[in-house]
Length: 71
Image (cartoon, rainbow, N blue to C red; front, top):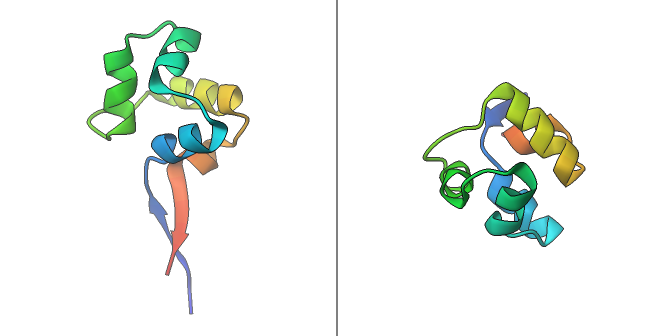
């Protein structure tokens, strides 16, 4: 059976795994906490450059922030 890749925003999950709060991430990125909240709740998406920066800060790949495997 072929696995289909489904795009999701995993930022909330990755932040929890790393023990980091939205506020801490907002301070690191020098962004308003409301912006981070929108990213975490999927009300908005960071641009490509910001996804790369988030991946670097959180020590994960961009794929880890964007994709999961689902049947």
